[in-house]
Image (tube, rainbow, N blue to C red; front, side, top):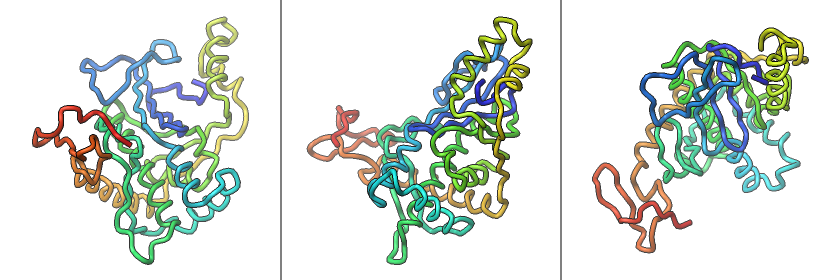
Length: 277
C-alpha cells in the first residue's frame, strides 16, 4: 500500500536482502500451489500473491566484498562497471542461487555458478552476468503471477533501486515500465494510509495515497535491444540450472563421503537434507 500497489494490474518488487514480488487479486485461486505465498492485502477486500527470492541484494554484497574490497566506498565503481557492460552481449552465464532457488522450484540445495569464463573475462563481465541473472529470475516470478491477471507496470523499492543502471536493467529484464517509489519508508506510509482510511479521514486508499505520498516517481522504460539480450541470457541461465540440477557440481556436499541425492533417479543418502558447508 505504501508503494502505491492499490490495483490488480501492477506488481511490487522489493529488492532487499531477499527479494519479494507481490500482486493484488480480488479472491484467492481455487487451487493453491506451493509456488506462491497467499495472504490478506492491506487494501480492503483484496488478497496478495507473493513470491520470495532467497537472496537478492545479498548477492551484490557478496560480490563487492570479494571482488571490490570495501563495501561502503565502491558503489560508484560498481555502477560504472555495470554501465560499461550495458547493452552488450556478455558471454558469462550465472546462476543467482547462493542460498538456493525458490522461484517456481523449491530447490534449496542448488548453489550459484559462473560459466563460460575465459582469459578475456573481466570481473565487470561477471558482475553484469550475475545481476542480469538475478533480474531475469525475478521476471520468471512475474511470469508466474501473470497467470492470475494482466500486469501492466511494476513498482520497485529496496536497496538495489539506489542504482539507476540497475533500475534500467530491471525494466529491460521485465519488459515493463517500472516506477521507483518516491518514499523509502513505504511500510510506515502504508500503515498511515490504512489508519487514515479506517478512521474516515479519507474515503479510499487511492485518495489517501495521493495526499500522503509526495515526491517524484522515477520511471524507466524497457530498452528493446537489451530486452532481447536478457531473454537470451535467461535461456542460458535456465539451461545451466537443469544441467547442474541433481549433480555434485551443483550442490554442496551433504556428508563426509560426498554423496549427493538425485531426485530423478531416486538414489542418494538417507540424510541428504543435511548440508555440510
